Picture 1 (tube, rainbow, N blue to C red):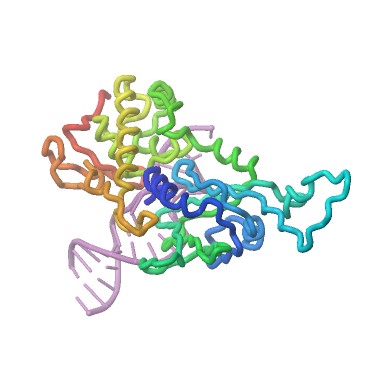
Picture 2 (picture 1 turned 60 degrees about the vertical axis):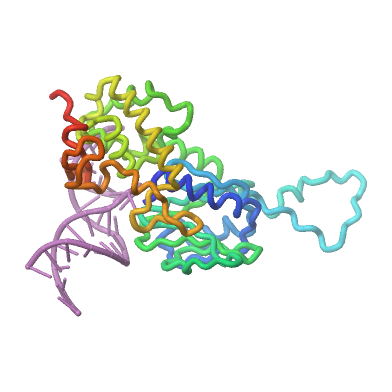
Length: 311
DNA sequence: CGTGCCCCCTGTCAGC
DNA sequence: TGCTGACAGGGGGCAC
């Protein structure tokens, strides 16, 4: 489910509860969720403290700090000339263990990151737990995923930068301009809906918001990217940003699996203009919305509001 | 390198 | 009621 607005909602919901928490133990129940060997995955996370909770495209990013130095059992009297810290500050990190690591969580179609064992929690327990992160305060962060299309990986800072570089710009960042979009569109012949889904081009857009943005911009999803004139490219830029912002305001779109961190549903479903509305009247002109399948996925289009451009 | 197709996996729903 | 096929928010691998 999770596209950018859903990932953003999850991050905002979890952040206040996770910052500063320490991972005491990690249980891998479904190792096919990992690329790494389970024992390596676990050892990279054990004892670490969650310092940041963020998002990159559709991915959730937990930045984990070095283990805090364990206080010595008996306070050793500092010897003269002892440099405070060099060993202690590194904590348990030794050769090959970086100070900071990033846990990258791709939720696939049905992944959820849930905080369980919380005081007074009445939500049903995770139905398909895949990875359990046991925190030192007895709470448990659970990665739950019915279809197991999700992936979790731990990257050191250099690997993280390299991975992040393979993703396109964040569509909501101020640095992502209409001009950038127009120039990038001009370089490809692929249908614009497929173009928008490619994470290397823009990070975070999935099938729902690609279709919704194209409706708002008045563009047929099948138009080759490079045939979109600059004027329409600017409309698409504005449409993308507005639909993503509105969806975040609505806490995302719950079609089926997606839930906000507190177990609620995102309310953007009712705001959708074309996605999933095959044969229903266009909200703007009343014409029948049509479903077109290409690139192996459904696209939705109002035939009058989204005319084919030139040919 | 870019593009299109298949597959990963489970659940749900429409149609017979 | 039960079976079968289509389809679902994603993305990696492979052939062309």
